[in-house]
Length: 317
View 1 (spheres, helix red, strand yellow):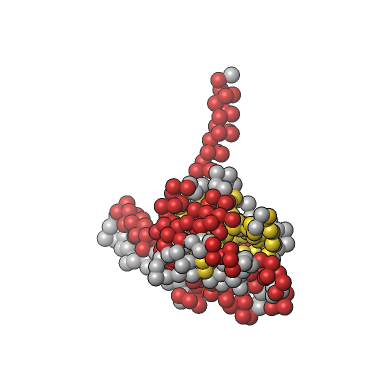
View 2: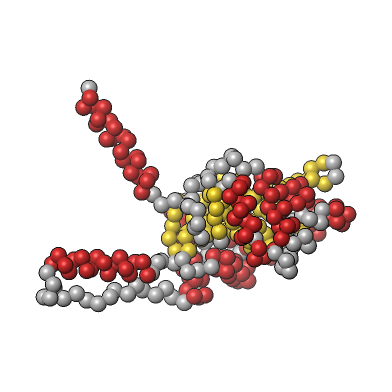
């Protein structure tokens, strides 16, 4: 009886624990790109590596190979000493050089995280989308969106407030000022409420400079908050609306298919009196709730905000 219990523990408990512990996952302190897809993460990872490498080579030049070091002479050293020296050289070369891109498990379905090393993810992804917007060439089949991640922290209110109060200074601290929107998405996490996070982030932006204004239709900057389990991924992006919320499929379409009518834009805008009453941005952002997610064929983002006594909903493609 005792032998069968030991076998069952080895068979079922040990292997699962090793597999979970050995897998690379998204962690606090990471920097890279969140890539979303539809049901084919392996193909998505392959396309992401190819696309990122192509444009990284254009921006930063080809990736340099690692130095192999001096060759060993087995005549001078015995086999054991030569082996130790070779191992030490390999370890030192790996420390001095890291690959530009490496994949990790994001912790959510249909989402791939690509670590970046020695590369600015915001600059790189903006360069990719700028080229696709101009050339209208489709260079991916399964990739939907590519969101740069410039910083990460623990997805708890006190940790997020501490991290964002410093992270947002680059764009919003006086004398810097800009119009902005806050885009929030939580995956496999239920301890962060969208309205509370947006209100808290808007309060931080207002403290950095009261002249920062919320703009839901054509903001200069978009603050992206992506929470996956207990990790909060943050970035501040330019041309977010122009590049179709960083959707590679949509940005490559012709301009006639991606233009927004004047009536739709008018329905999304707030009145001048309301904007004047909410100059600090905190109250307006408390009423503003934005969420971006993925659909089966194309991703959409919903933008909800209160106007007067009711709630008005506008869905942006």
